[in-house]
Structures are given as C-alpha cells and as structure tokens.
Image (spheres, rainbow, N blue to C red):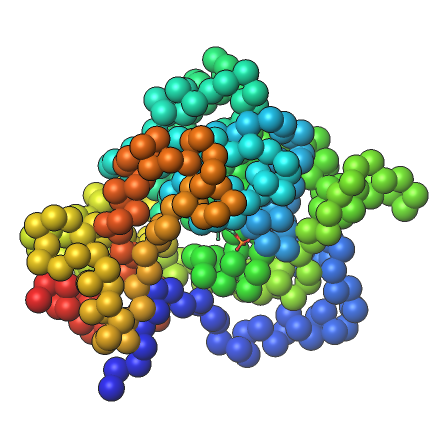
Length: 367
Ligand SMILES: *Cc1c(COP(=O)(O)O)cnc(C)c1O
C-alpha cells in the first residue's frame, strides 16, 4: 500500500542541523522579545526577499490584524472571497466591514474593475490576495488606490520569494503580509511577517506587536502580543539556507504535472504568469464540463487512493455564516469566484513528493 499523500508537507531539515541553534538558545537563555535569532532572521529575510523592512510575527493572521491597525483602517475594506478565511477574519477583528468583489477568471485574483465598482464613501482600503503566489495586477490596483485615496494591504501569505518584473511582489501596496505556517513554502512552524517600505512604519508595527510598548514605561497603542520566539526564528534561519533546493524541487514537480496533465480533456491548468519568478506553492487544476467526472467525484476518487488533494478555495469566504448576510456576499455579485470554487482542486506539491507519486496522481486523473 503506498503511503498517504497530502496536499502539502513541511520541509524539515536534518535534525542535527538544528541542534547548534538550540544549544545557543539554551546558553544565552534569550527565548523571545527580539532576541539575536529574531534580529538575524529579520535581516536575512529582508535581504533574501529584496525588501526594505520586515517585522516578524507569531503567525500570519495576527500580522494581518496588526497591519490594519498600523494604518488605522476604518469603515469598509474591499477584499476577495477566494482566499483562506483569515483574510476576511482580520477585517472582522478590526470591526471593519468586508466588501467582497469578484475575481478575474484567468488569475483568480481580485478583478481591478470589480474593485472600482465596489468603492463607496466608507471605503478606506483594499485587501487583495496573491492567490497561489500569482501576482495581482498591482499596477491597476495602485492606480485605483491613488485615484480614490485608499490604502492597499496585500495578503501575501502565498507569495514568499515571488517576483514581478525582477522585483519582489511584496513591495507593492502600503504593506504586505506573509505567513510562515507549517503548510507554507517557507515555514517557522507558526509565523508570519509584515513587509513595509520605511523604518518609521516598521517602528510602529514593532510597538503594536509588543503590547504597544515604546520603552519600559511608555505604551503608545493598545498593541497585541504578536512576537515570534527564538526557536521559531532559529528554525527560519536554518530553513532559509535550504530554500534553493526547496524551490528547485517544487519547480520540477510543477513541470511534471504540466507535462502529464496537458491534453486531458476537461482539465484546465493555469499557465505560469509572465515575467514572474514563482514559488510553486500550489498546483491548482479546474475540473470543467468536458471531464467525465464532476470535481467532487474526482476529489473522492483521489481520496480513495490515499491522495488528499484539497479544494482551495471552497467554500468561498463569502459563504461562511459570519459573511453570507453581507450584500456583497451573494453568488450573483461573485459569479466568477462561485464557478471557480466549484471546479478547483489543488494537487499535492511539496519537496519530499516523489516523481512516482506525481505520476500516480496524473494517471488517476487521466483515467
Ligand atoms: C495561511 C494563510 C493565512 C494565515 O496565516 P497563518 O500564519 O496560518 O495565520 C492568511 N491568508 C492566506 C491567504 C493564507 O493562505
């Protein structure tokens, strides 16, 4: 019996490589609060990602909540229903009203025209997602933001190391938020970061993630505890060393799927985006009308063979109980997202996945 295959598995370096980091932590007894590994990881990541400043967090969701606080966003925020639920939850945690706009049928990212149509006098910001690490139309979104005086906070949880025209996609907008959850391309077990363009904003974010403390006796904001600890940061530094091999293996798997699935009637694959270095974090396929099975039947067929693909993103965020009463949450307002959510399956992709596993997935889909 072949072993179960899940949609993703974390990359774990050899355990003995982590030992020296742990010994250093045990020696200096600095466990959290901007310790030496935390400082090193912030610098190393900013360099690796090609961004000016970055503030580490305990997870991506707290980073999203804090990003909205840092810019003092109020009123309505235009966002996508086609994402992980934390995107919209971060708005509710700030007492903001999510306004869902539809996605582009070719990229699954927010459609800039639909963003513009959703703007009201209460709109103060846009929260787009680079879905599967494929860059949003950042130029069109920035133009809308400039025209209407809106802030842009990207949920870049899928976009680690992704570039657009040779530049980090994390430089787009006012802030970008990363997740380093165990299921992501780069992980620190749990973790995340806010990417920001200037030192003043980073300072404010650093206050907010540490209860609002500016110094021992000064609290400047009702901050949260969003700090990353030293074990997480050390693991991140080690993981960063392995990124070239992680990305290379993911790219090989992506190519193997593309070659193997090309030409299967009713299976649609998204072409790789132009002019962008990708991280190959997901491999979505669409099960369309020409395929002999429905999407859920194919999903079940794979499960019966111990292949646990996932329907990211189904259900849409706008279909969950805390959102579905919103005027913007109706399927009539979101026809493209509603259709894609019924057709999508994300196939297994992670460094330890073997070619023979990939071929087995392809054969099951083909026949
Ligand atoms: C993973 C993810 C998050 C949440 O990140 P956590 O680190 O798990 O809190 C937010 N948005 C998207 C799109 C994600 O995929």
